[in-house]
Amino acid sequence: MGPSLADTTWIYGGDEATITETLQNGRPGGMPAFGGQATPDEIADVVAYVMSLSK
Image (cartoon, rainbow, N blue to C red; front, side, top):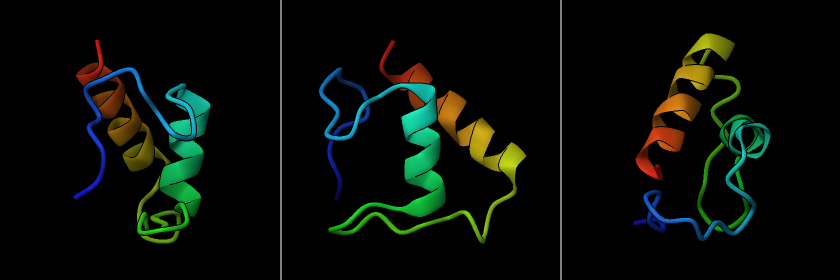
């Protein structure tokens, strides 16, 4: 289980560009890369959803 997405504490940053990078390239320690599995539009949809959780 990863950290909460509903708070304002983000290890790598919670801005749109950083979340997109995280989804595309993954992060060490457990976050897999989805850049080869998801389209840019699908990643953008997930970014929008994740950002909506912390509002």
